[in-house]
Length: 293
Length: 97
Image 1 (cartoon, each protein chain N blue to C red):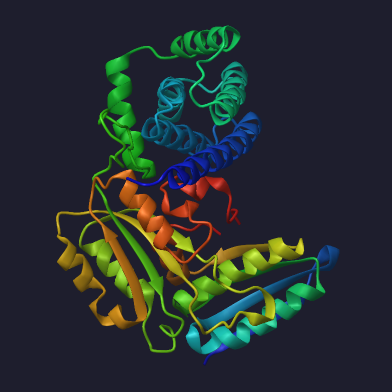
Image 2: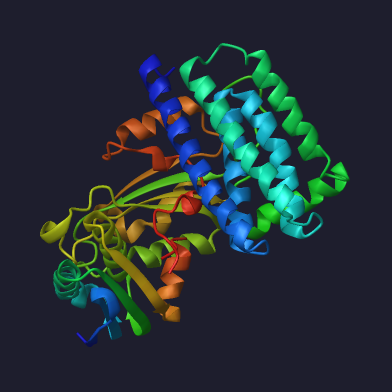
């Protein structure tokens, strides 16, 4: 078992990342107000809701999960055009955004306290209004699968109720390349694209916390790492083989599918960066680390 | 190393660069020094990378670096065009710039 502190840190990651996702959601909602057909914005809102839902399930914040689940269903409709994006809907989505913030504040300050009556009424009220937009549950399910596939988010719904499990069917691969890989004539691109041929890179995040600022950074040295969620039928040995040529120049950690939270915590503690939130899949493309050009 | 850099002054103390050729480990060290210096001297940089026909992960890293450096200095950094070679790298790493 991970100790209490690790669990607390891990939960902090959840709250921080959820708030980042909410910020991204808000920005996209505001752009949607200007252009109600902007697909990127709808995708980003969907991603945020979807990821918060998955993570909430994992951390036992079921009410946030329940709420974002309904929200997500409406967004599926909006994205596939079965629900039109009216100013009223955008208004409702903004209210939902604010409400998720309320829920996060609540659970962060006092995890085990039930919601107070006023919040419950708000909760039900918003759910009722959201549900009015969803005509047909069966249809939503199908559409959702399609959306998830199209925009490449991880479906991290948690069906495993009995334990904290990172319920996805992906390998998790952490790579930290050595400083000299470029100079040694090796390009991480080749290895990772080769990996992509052996399965599906569901999610990948570049890690560059350890890259120096300003003059200290040397352009020909490598400061990069990657956190990868990889879906494939190949085994651990075969994954390691992909990185065979770079094995002396790269720190590789591999976690099998359906790894327990405790093992993820261990991995995070093992990694060189102090802030390791990014290990955790939040599909953070929406969180604006690098903006669109 | 084959890399051509064209620098143009733009409005509002911005600089616009057009790069053509290689963004690889062979050019990364020098290119980093050049662009970092330029970034310090202006309010923001726009950069056209449509003609980058050879690139590797060091080029990708350099762009992440400049983006972060610009944000850190309170300046703007924006890529206006990207060649398909660079686009492939960004697509693999699922980074948007």
